Structure formats: structure tokens, C-alpha cells
Amino acid sequence: MPLYTTDALILRTYKLGESDRIVVFLTRDRGKKRGVAKNARQSRRRFGGALEPLTCGRVGYLERERRDLVRLDYVEPMRSPMTVIDGESLGYVEYFAELIDEWAQEADPNETLFRLGASMVDAMAARVPIDPLARYFEYWLLRLQGIYEPDPRLSDHARGFLERARSSSPFALGDSPVPAGALRELEAAHRALITMHLEKDLKSVRVLRDMFSEGRRS
Image (cartoon, rainbow, N blue to C red; front, side, top):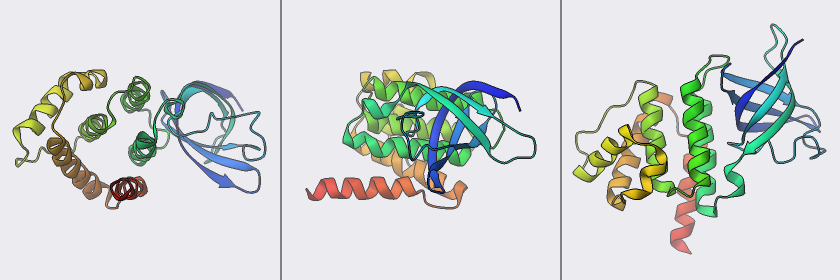
């Protein structure tokens, strides 16, 4: 049973029994994996905060043929948005992670998707404004899946943002402010496409909606 080591993004975790966790992670070179982190719920010494969503790190895992779950041996975190983000951005960590999880295929290498996710971690750490960053992420995720369809009703400001997103890195998003109305247009258009192709609403979208509703009432 060989030990594989690779760069990976942690996407989500689930409770397993009284002491373990199932960890879903996207590797750079071997696609999405699901593994068991033994005793992750009882002791933080082995994994610590390395299992938080969108933690980017070096993982080691053991894999047997014809087994759905690998055994996660260790995670060496290199960077995590959870250490630098504010409360407003917290919901977007779950949102990005859930979208990657929905589109990543089991054991199907997709380095481009991995690099997109890792760039979101770096951009959040660099304090790139979260609203345009989310629209950038949605745009590129839909393009990578080959299902991006520009809404002909988008305003000139919204179209201008997409033109810049197509040819620039996420770190440049703060250089050209975008009107809030244009970002709302893109949010609605992108999420309509996402919902249509996934055929369901995302849990993280409901969390974001509730979070911002609370913010407006406070």
C-alpha cells in the first residue's frame, strides 16, 4: 500500500464515528479524493487546523485498489484563508470549496481547477476585495467547464469586468473598481447558470444569503 504525497486543497470534512473524519480534498495531479483522518476529532495534535476548508498544503495518503476511501496520513498546511480573512469573507471560503467539490471529479486529474482554487487562497490572503473575487471565480469555473454563456442583458460595466477577468489575474481586481450594481448583475447571471447545471441550490449560497440579510438588519 504505497504512500502518495502531493499538493492538495482541503474542500470539506464530515464526522465519521466518534473520533474520525472523512476529508474531501482535491489533489494537484490525481483528482479529488476522499480519505479517513483517524482520530481527527479527538486530538488536534496530528492535524491541527490543517483540515479547514481551502487549506492548501502537502498531503500524504495511503490508497488501496478497489477502496473508495484512502487513509489520510498527514497534512502539512502551507497557507489557509482562515488565518487572514474577516467575517464577511468567511462564507465565501465555504462557497468556493463547495463549488470546487461539486465540479471536481473523483480520481480525475484537473490541475487547472486546482490552480484556480489555490489562486483564490492566495488572493484572499492578499486582501483582494471579496465581491469581485467571487465573480472572477464563478466566471473562470464556468469557463473551465465549457458552460459559460454571457447574458446579453448585461450592462457595459459588467461586460467590461468580464473582459478584464479573461485576461488578468485575480490580484489585479482591486486596480479597477467595479460598480456594485454590475457585480450584482454578474452574481445573478452566474448563479443562475450554476444552479441550472448542478440542478440544485448550494448550501453555501443559502448561508451567504442569510449572512448578508443579517448584516442589513443589524
